Amino acid sequence: MTTLNLASILEHSAMLTPNAVAITSGPVHRTYAQLDAEASKVAAGLVSLGIQPGDHVALSCPNIPAFPAAYFGILKAGAVVVPLNILLKPREVGYHLRDSDTRALIAFEGTPELPMARIARTACDEVSCPHLIVITADPEAPASVSPALTFGQIMHPHPARFHTQPREPADTAVILYTSGTTGQSKGAELTHGNMVSNAVASHDMFRPAMRGGLEQEVALITLPLFHSTAQTCLMNMGFYGGLRLVLSARFDPRTCLELMEREHVGFWIGVPTMYWALLQCVTGAGADPAPVARNLRLCVSGGAPMPHEVMRRFEETFGVRVLEGYGLSETSPVAAFNQLQRASKPGTVGLPVFGVDIRCVDERDVPVATGERGEVVIRGPNVMTGYYNRPVETAEAFRGGWFHTGDIGTLDDEGYLTIHDRRDDMILRGGFNVYPREIEELLMTHPGVALAAVVGIPDERLGQEVKALVVRRPGLDVTETALIEWCRHQLAAYRYPRSVEFRDALPVGATGKILKRELRTPRPS
Image (tube, rainbow, N blue to C red):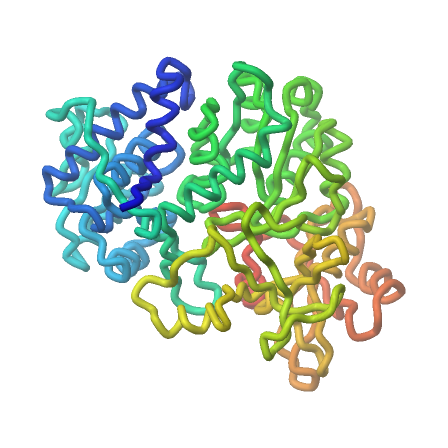
């Protein structure tokens, strides 16, 4: 039997550099040895509750030290981690617990504004989840809901050593739920082999920009750890490489810049709206980028297409290279990346990562010619085994042995991938395909536009019509008529927006991605 447990990436660094700091969270620091010991105590506590290898344990927790302790504790016990979005309501938490057949839920107690423990208790009662474990801010405090154990109670009686349960590379390690933009969210089953290989591949891609020798690199985590990018490309990659990870419980642009300066951060991953917010903090609020730029050596963007103008301005302002990549929850997540060894191609998401094959195919799943648009399909060691308990959806997603992403892309003659849009975001206007990203890129070059999103709205005559939602630059009063006219002179007649709605901000989800499904819903008058 070939054994591989994702927990080994923490255990190995705890063996090599036990006294190096693994995580920093405000004034709290955990060395690799301390974090590994906490995870071992969690594992022993779960086993004492009857959790067995292969059981599913959900985790609802913000970016605090308890998250990695719980995450790797679940893995050490041989169980499967089911990370949950911390913003879910009781009904939504209940759905995830029921759908994933979860046997225990570890949940942070939350705040008065976000009472996570109370939400968790309601959901567990609804679906008869056997065990609720509450992470309290004070390890000695009792749980704020009943019945429930506390994180401290399941850890306290157990030793700091635990014999990690052996798992095979093809065994499920994590179930990541998709965003559910096309219906109820589905649980992508990612194996120990999937997750380890993608963490190692991520480290290999980022390593050339990191501090050399034995000097420890510092990475800042502002993306939520329940998200695939933060898990693989920051937490798991970082622990594999022995980095010090600075945890931020929520993204705030000024706080982010302060942490980058104070903690000497060299590496950061964000979504495009975060890059935009940091630029606004510098240009609008007068924050000084120089102290941050002194240490920052590499930034990565993912989760959504990065507007060219935002990337250009960020690189100039902070003097750092920004590399854009591409992936999905179903691919662990990284599938393609603009890497340090080669020049980036702005607008592309780079080349396939190690071991991964990518094609663009037509409606019959036949590969399209170089430069032609088609659905992006992927195969490789990073691709999930399927959707949990959904054989029909799994079979549809893996037609012909390739995972079908639902994204529309092109491959150039060097193999660089460009993502033009989600297939679901594409606008069909009078029989013509309109790709919102291309219009958004153009709008971002207008001097009066700070941020833009384009969606299709119902139209009796054409099926769909093109609409832009725009955040103005401060002090510039561009009008709807002027912006439409400007677009009309630069876009084909079927592509330019016929209406523009100005907003103070665009809705974003917990990961910072613009929520286009909300933009498609008309606001009440």
